[in-house]
Length: 240
Length: 288
Ligand SMILES: Nc1ncnc2c1ncn2[C@@H]1O[C@H](COP(=O)(O)OP(=O)(O)OP(=O)(O)O)[C@@H](O)[C@H]1O
Ligand SMILES: [Mg+2]
Image (cartoon, rainbow over all chains, first blue to last red; front, side):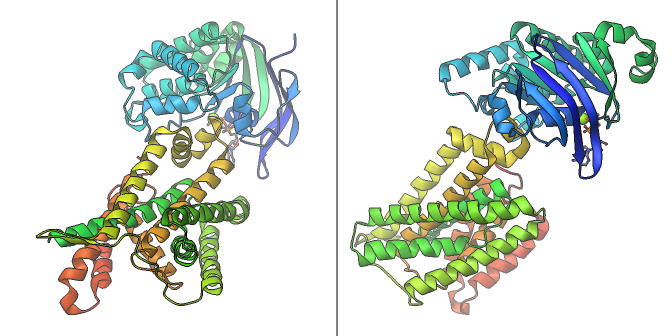
């Protein structure tokens, strides 16, 4: 079957310095795929390339079989790809409600938008308590829930998550991991999850790619990678 | 005393509208629009031509001022600012460009309308008199129109979809883009809207104080003052700054009259002290 997203031999540069040097990855319909790797490995660059925030120099990106590289970010959302960016990026001086409404910017049906808000609030009850609070005043974990909810408001087919565990209290990391699994299952969204918390990423995903300095070093079944000696050594800090 | 407050409110409402336009453009594009006063002047002359010369109703003239400036603003954004922002990473470039458009608009206004001070017939005559306040009806009307416009603008920014998109854009450009906001389109809408507000105030005030081609620069400087008092890029700050400046001017003109024309000298001195204590103005944060 044709993959939902096919990232084929992509090269990406910042000025003259490469960040991706011939990376190929695939996400199939219904999957959760993890991208793990150290700081500066190029994980975020992959997501920036998919959303059109950064132009690629070589290779192809296909979504549902058609080329999407070179498409502007605002068009990419309309095609059904939503991204939760690195460092969250809530709209800090807007309420939770307005942040969620911004997530539905590409949609017009008010009734359906309200249904999506209800869905997000059921999934993240904390957001319900904070519905009229300014987003910038919430805790890191709450902001993370908000940006995941905001991304869901666009009703994506493919959800890109960039380090949702970063700056989130350990207890909430569990919650967020659970919601990723639940979202993937209930909303029929495929997920591409970037994480430095490799253990969490490998637990919630079916397949994974491990990146080192702009290249895929290892890839395979997440459960197997979690047990793999090399992965343990390089990405899980030895112990389990 | 009541008289001074009434004058301050009337003036403050006009100033607040000017500052709102300037702060909108700044918040959206990080451009300090040096040509804001010139846009005001152009708006004044449009109303002068249509209401004063062609004798059409004032409302129509005012709408023409707004529409003309919206178009001028949109064109300036699309062909000048967008091009420069795309090619240059340095902020000085857009400042220079803004200064250049200010000189350009000054010249255009001078060529089209000459250098004379121009006024128009009163929009309504008569004076409101009570024991403490004397206020001509036209000032009251112009003040009320300005306040209604401020309220409309704020409701638009707060509750409409384009308003929300512009706030999002001002708070986080990249995140807004990821939500599907077309940055270029909304920058243009914002610039047009900001210019429109300047043009409308120009049209309103031509009916009270008249207009001449030389006041663009001073108006721009006043607009900067207000935005600095309130805090750049903040709606509440622009409004506060506008009313504070209007009030200071009104008080100054009364209290300091005996010492000659030193109101603005005093205002500048106060502002310097204020900014050294609060460099970000009253509410130094973008778009609350
Ligand atoms: N805007 C930029 N300008 C220049 N170089 C950049 C820029 N963004 C990223 N890089 C470089 O590109 C490489 C890959 O960066 P990227 O952000 O994709 O890494 P990452 O795997 O997401 O790292 P992290 O875990 O720290 O977020 C790094 O070497 C980084 O320094
Ligand atoms: Mg990253």
